[in-house]
Amino acid sequence: MRELVVLGTASQVPTRHRNHNGYLLRWDDEVILFDPGEGTQRQMLLAGAPVTPLKRICITHFHGDHSLGLPGILQRISLDKVPHPVTVHYPAGGQEFYDRLRHATSYWDNAEIVPGPVGAGFAVETSAGRLTALPLLHPIETYGYRLVEPDSRRMVPALLAQHGIKGPAVGELQRAGRLGDVTIEQVSEARPGQSFAFVMDTGLCDSVFELARGVDMLVIESTFLAEDAAMAAQVGHLTAGQAGMVARESGVRKLVLTHFSQRYPDPSRFLEEAAKEFDGDVVAAEDLLKVPFPTRR
Image (cartoon, rainbow, N blue to C red; front, side, top):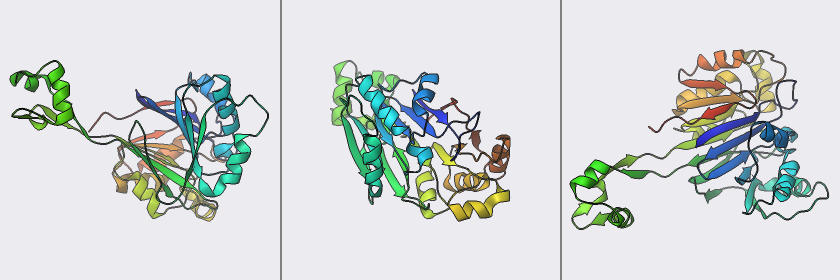
């Protein structure tokens, strides 16, 4: 299963209908929680998403609407006796904030929580692919994340049958790339890897486009509408139109808008503004919405 579970979509101040940020990426066996804001633990309960499958948590920056839910999630991981390590990625310069949130209150801390500070050149291999990060343009140290699955090949049963390859021989061919005179290219077809980018609080900068380049799904903040573009630039945020422009210029397949300011009660305006710039698949995120990944190219 590959999908994004939206846990919260509000920027800075939650509303009656929008929780603080929280985004759960289900990518087969790799389950990643991005930016757990206040109330994320309860939102996961409402979404039917337990903490047990979590493999890692990625925090873009240490503003409260993106990180105040971390203590509750970490304590729940201990309470539910998650049997595997859970890695937490966060800006290295915010180590003091991570330390405070890691032990915000007294609790039975029996989980294996692995700190994974993010800095220049950050990259880590996961079961889903290569996770990288780039610095964004915001008043405090902030990173966006990009996950890329490596390309592979899919075995074609009809071609295998033509060459008389079956059973354990198929695995041997996959491991070695060749079985006698038969190469793996003769009995398989290219299987392009999928990709995902997560871009939160930032003004326009080169990193935004680099993170978004060619991804199957881009989750990106669109805090403001064009009428407040000057304010957006002043405080290090994007408008919905700018998010749409990034998606268009970067060749994104599915665009997910989120992080909406409470000053706009009608979320359809974000969708309309982004659609003027990007004629592809656009979603205005709502709390507890599940967004499936596009099919492979």
